[in-house]
Image (cartoon, rainbow, N blue to C red; front, side, top):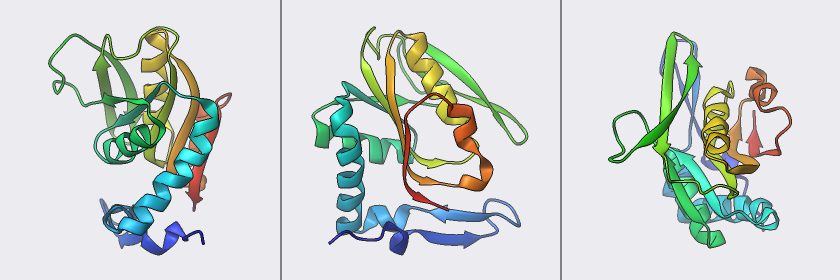
Length: 172
């Protein structure tokens, strides 16, 4: 029996600002059956693509990404906010509603030719996912897929990821 992941995704009205309904994935992560089912579904999609690495960004991308990497026997690469990694890094910038932000990975995190799946919790506008793709490709890695637990289709994030194999478990 496949569990409906929506049963453990909680709506939080007016967070982080008034008028926004935040999709909280923490109840899904906290429930062992639902978390296991989430990773199983991601692994079923990812396994045939034969990734060498899974790249996830802080913070929930770490949770889902490391569990998926473990399930597949792949390595895990952490994309972090600036100043969090101790060695030489590369950086990609992305736009926010009011300003910009960036993510960094270690310069040696993705060996040239590595097959990489980008994984994150939510696909919204696609800006952070596109930045992760730029990091991987800038280091000579090959993006073989981009996966999300949840996608907010009304924000058209897939448009920024045109030409890539994009998969979401749940859409709103």
